[in-house]
Image 1 (cartoon, rainbow, N blue to C red):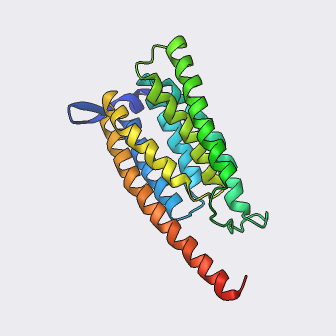
Image 2 (image 1 turned 90 degrees about the vertical axis):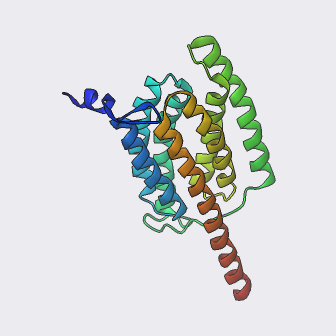
Length: 216
């Protein structure tokens, strides 16, 4: 058995759905990646790239073409995020001092507009050019995830809210495509996103208090 056959082979059955080894790999690396983001660990980016590779294989086989493309783009953005976090606010390699900040009104407005317009355009392309049975949610997850990942790379606090909405859409989407373990993973992602949101908010409040005390 070669590596491709092994990855697609059934590891076990969950809720009457076969779970492949590649889905198991996606589950483990995905959970580790989100936990790493919540804890501001730089290693979340290379682990995330491994997760992207696993999900490209998984989503392509499930007919989720928008999310297959998303994983490829994620891998490219992960390299950007890895460099951005490594250099930090000072721009020096290894500093990891990029501060958590809120989105400006302009950033928030552009982000919302980008998600709406991109969702409409991608859904049209998926409907017209593929056999996708779920073009709208597939397109939304693609569009919103790109915006969230860009904001995450810049440590914009509100990216957690975007991920929470994405997870809420993704859970029933994956169940509908027979990806039960991945759907359960996204339930875990949802919990980790809430954890990350609370943790980042606490860190931001502590930092603001320190700056106020220092008179900055």
